[in-house]
Image 1 (tube, rainbow, N blue to C red):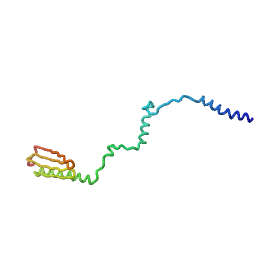
Image 2 (cartoon, rainbow, N blue to C red):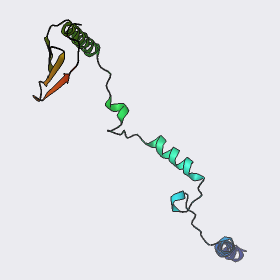
Image 3 (cartoon, rainbow, N blue to C red):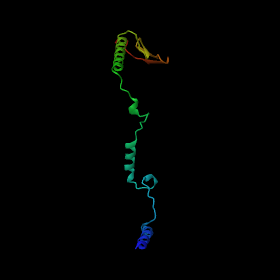
Image 4 (tube, helix red, strand yellow):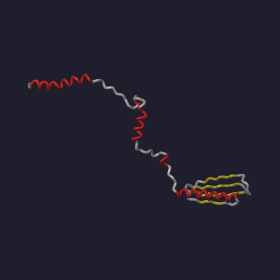
Length: 139
């Protein structure tokens, strides 16, 4: 009885190994990614998974490059626009004028119906000249 039990215990692993040979089959690789031959319907799923895990931010993203101007910057821009409008109105009345800001110098001269606008960039020293002819000098 002891011997039969020992023989049964020794034979059990052999029977298990013989049974597993019948269950074995050839391994076949099927890619998941459609770029490598996988199912094309997996593409959206894979891209959504990748985007949901992506925590890196693009340093050149145009949405991140724009900064909302401060209230002081908006006020300064508005004031400069108003001063330029007043300067052009004064030139229309026969006066010449000049506007100096942190960024540029604008000089406007009306010479008998020829309006000359000289704009100087204070940072680089570049100058632009705009000449408009045919204005009515009597306005």
